[in-house]
Image (cartoon, rainbow, N blue to C red; front, side):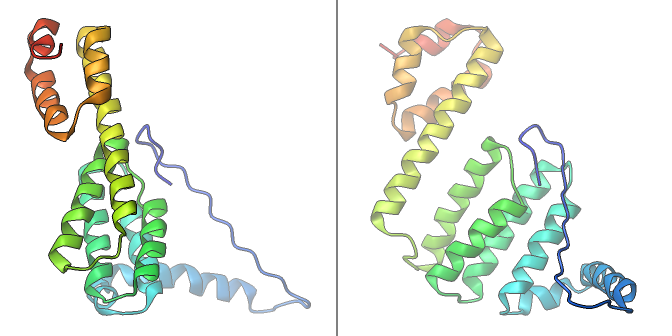
Length: 199
């Protein structure tokens, strides 16, 4: 599991209900363990497989291989999602597997916004309306809210405060205005540069 502060925390639980002793238990556990690592060298098979469990293994391996590497994890997450569409899964399968990938390959909010935009682009490329217009609108608003939160953090980090006028402007800004303010916030020499056209 990827914490928002960039550190990893793993909880692995294996549960079996058995009515009698299993003399080969240790050997079976060893087989489970080494088979997980065996798939590391069989990436092409996983990509080509239509079995949903191949996606589970891919997501698990991606989470392990990108520990502490946010940009690599972001790229891996986008590739995993793209693979769902290329496999030709039904809409419900895709949504469930996206939830699973999201849990395995969690990212900080800023990178999650990039992944969400990539998902929109993938859907357009594939010409597949897996997301209803209502869901698309809801998600788009969620992305804007995330961008607003990130922008406010950047401004506070750089200048120590966000003036009320600017905060109100950000709260109601559309995508184009938010993009302009975000670009300006990274290079502005002072708050005055950001307050231009915010009245």
